[in-house]
Length: 294
Image 1 (spheres, rainbow, N blue to C red):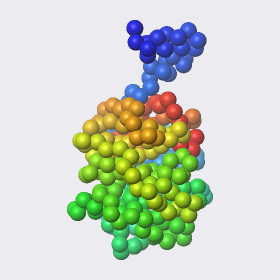
Image 2: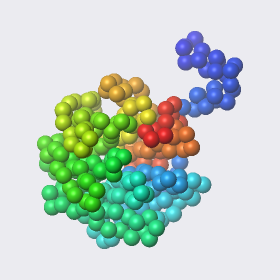
Image 3: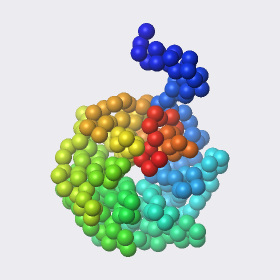
Image 4: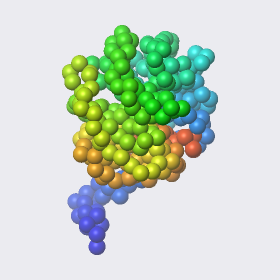
């Protein structure tokens, strides 16, 4: 009898509900119907009221909203020429979007739904993914897919873009550790994840290889509250969970293959919601650790 089965039996004797929950961990299930987003579905992010926002609902250049009761609606349509790839909220509830076709980071007033350009820089390739710290500084990955190169930017309050690194591969997923002292950036084509030290001003140093895989690509990443990193393995259809030391803890198998991003949510922060580009939908699984910020 395996240790896992023995653990289930023990927990079942103590609390049958907990045993049932334990058996359901890390099992992907459908969260939305298939084919209601485009194949550019990405960037899931919750607001403070529990609404889940996802890019490219029904057609590219839109933002969809999934209410807590799972009702899905069109939240807004972006200006002509803009297509979002990532969504983040600041401490005041403003929404920011990585606009990869317009080469901008956009800002959305959630009350009026007015969209404005927060920052545009001619040196941007195509802002891809965003993360934000407690001081409302935004970190953006900026890949050049044609050249297999990329950059990392910091965007300070007011919309000032600061170039942090211009010698990356195809920079894609980007995430801060729970204490905001480490910035993780992955490279989709090179299949490497890099870690940087982050100082109190938001500058990065001490670039080092955190993890590397021999196959499949990377996309969005998120941390749990213990500092483990959850990485979408695009094409393989799994979420790879890496310890703060870069060791693979587990892989969570999804129903689809082209996973593009994820976000923690639910009342206790232990639900993980994943965007699937091949299924044009979202899946969800239960996790044992809450996400960063819960």
